[in-house]
Amino acid sequence: MSVLERSPRQGAIPSLLNHSELFREQCKQLMLEATKSSKRMQDDDSNQLNQRIGDIQFVKQELELKLEKITVEIDALIALQSRVEKALEATKEPLRVTLLCLEERVKRFPSEMLDDDVDAELRKEKEVFEEVACLLQRVAEQITEQIRLNRSAKYRLEQDLKEKYEAQTIDNSCAIMTAHSKDHLQLQSTGLSQISVPVTVEHWEDISHVNMTEGEKQSTNSESLRALVESVLEQTAADMRNKIQATAAAFELNIQEIKSAKSQMEDKMLKIQAEISGQQRIREDLQAAVLEIEGSLSLAQARLALRQQRPGKEQCHDLVQTLLLSEVQQLTAHISKLREELMRSEEMQRSLISLQLQLQENINVKSSSLYIDEVRCLQHREPVLIHNF
Image (cartoon, rainbow, N blue to C red):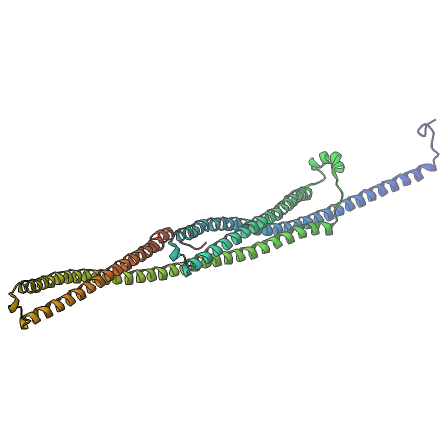
């Protein structure tokens, strides 16, 4: 028999009504408290979500600043790397010209193969250019490595920002979500299965802090490296210009010395040529004098011979005979002396001609050296200009 079928006792009816009424009040109270508690918890959740969204926004702003800074540094380093590569390329032609000048100067005559100031400056120039090229190569490698580090830091910042954006988007959705929203009904069945290992707030903050610290560190390193590279580019360009100027000054001084020596030799050559011509003329005069005196001697000898034909008693050793004999003797001595001088003139002329040939050879040597330095080397060096890197 059910309760409804049983006839309640009349005394139990008030008690049951009171109990029912009390129960309803308790249910109303429970629903009220549950509603208040739910509302309070939703408000707390909303406040915490808004605070969390604010925290994420703040970290996002910091990350964006670091990302912008590291991006600027990457672009600046790429531009600087291009300058370094161009500077490295700009060292090749001056070095090639220096080596070419050293090769050209090896072609000088052995007597001119001296270890002069020009050779010394060219060797120093070669050393400076090679050192600059090596330094720029190392700098280029450092820039490449720093760009790699910057991009790595940038990637971590971007990933962190991406996750922060996703988290903020989700929390924004959570913040505007209500009990009547339809979306949360669809997430209830799948949300729990996607929960990953929880991360503490401190760990969450540390992750971004590490990423921002690394980004700031690489940005600072990039700034320091750029300042160093700018200094290196300025100094290496100045070093190359100074070395080229020093070598050019050595070339100019050597060319002037060669021209001066060649000019002095040419002056001596003119004097020697004039002296050779003078010796030629004096030889001709000596030969003419010998011929003339020989004619006089022949005349005196002919007179003596003719006077030998006088009759025996007439062959008197008179004054004429004495004069003729004296004349023959003196003329013979004159001719002998003139012939001696003629021989000396011929010997002197041969010496002058030998000196002329030797001097001409020296002039040719100087002309060759002058051609190599002034024409060949300076033509090679003329287009070489070192601009600011």
